Length: 218
Image 1 (cartoon, rainbow, N blue to C red):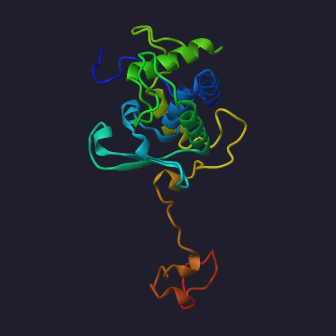
Image 2 (tube, helix red, strand yellow; image 1 turned 90 degrees about the vertical axis):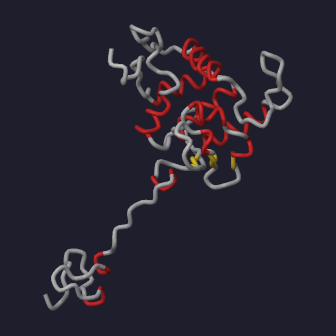
Image 3 (spheres, rainbow, N blue to C red; image 1 turned 180 degrees about the horizontal axis):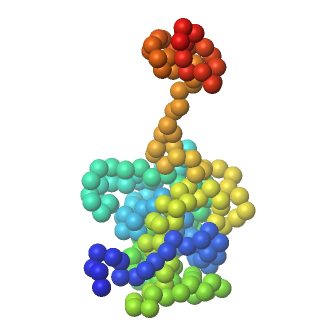
């Protein structure tokens, strides 16, 4: 077996599959996996996030990732949440007040998602079991082909969750536009602001015609 390849052959999963999976989760699971799907964060980084790193008042809502949260441990990074993820995180933060985990410790702590990775993985596994989906398991490992790492693949292939996973539409928050994920769109200069392709005269000398890139002299 090639050690450089992942042991379990996974896939990103379709929107319809994730929609059914998430609707079979509790408020914590919904908030966690919508945050993962809309940001592309690794599960370890997201479970390290503190409430103070979350900014729900910004537009769009965002999470500040400290260097200690990331796998490489390099530089600060900001990731953005969809309106749907923001809504479920707000509901989850209200829901967890006064609640305790199975070990008796408080759920309402300074960490946004105060659970272990194994618990997060179990939430996904149980949601798949409760759903009507027939998601195959890897023949060698017995792990389903949709698991926690699939959220990163889903983000890369959908980049933005333009379509809501838990309801018909998204009324607020970021869409799939690239600038909402930290990348500014490439600005294409207007034809009349370009310099002449031949004599390189200033833009004012170029005819204001989209089909023409040369000045009147050329």
